[in-house]
Amino acid sequence: GIIFDEAHCLSSWGSTFRPEYHKLGQLRSLLFPDTAFYATSATMPPCIYKDVCQVLGMKSATTVAIQIETDRPNIQYTCRTLACGSQGFESLDFLIPEDVQSPEDIPLTLVYLDSITDCKNAAKHLWQCLPDSMKGWDGDTQLPLEECVVSWFTSVMLRRFKDNAMSHFKAGSLRILCCTDAAGMGCDIPNVMQVVQYHVPTSLEALVQHFGHCVRNPELISEAYLLVNTSV
Image 1 (tube, rainbow, N blue to C red):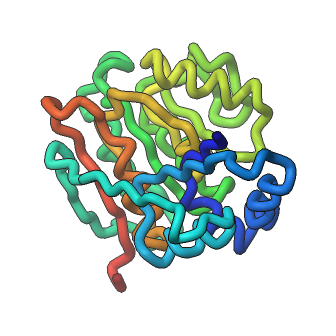
Image 2 (spheres, rainbow, N blue to C red):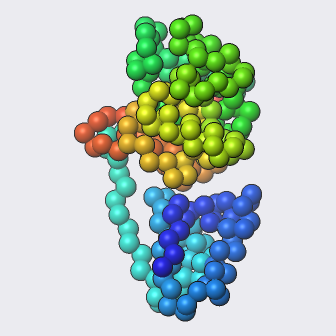
Image 3 (cartoon, helix red, strand yellow):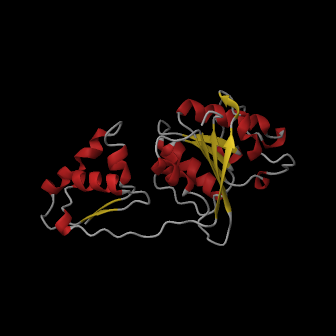
């Protein structure tokens, strides 16, 4: 069989900047007729489910839909108003505790932003909020990740850099990762204590996906923050 994880991307990305995703159904012509297709996602409402089935050539008569409860009662949701409109990143200052003494004082945090530029600028702003002993890099030239408490993660980075970033984030030496959707693909880090969505995302499914990266241990409480403009 063929497994398509994060299958909602076939619909949401295939119609925009990943048109090749809409061609994945052509794999059937290269496989045995009875090859099973499995499509999995935490966010597949009826409209996206229908689109995914169409893309992959999954007929209703031979397709079994398995729905599992995705409620996460251990996630506390908070909506905050951006303190300075949409231009600055001072609204992220709360992620750096005022009495921070060591990297471990900062909860493991993912900050989702709309663009590559925003990811870099947000990381640089948070870097400026750190005590000198914890900065680890000059805010411009990236140093070895084991020296960084805050950094960014986007799709345009080299595979080696992305692998190292996730490795150090999972190990806990990198505490805050400012990222785009690229960080969510295949991300399986069980102890993320905070997820921040900076600005309202393009869809409710995207918001659910981002907040879904909060801590996986049901006995721990994690925080999910949505930061919005005053006009929202």
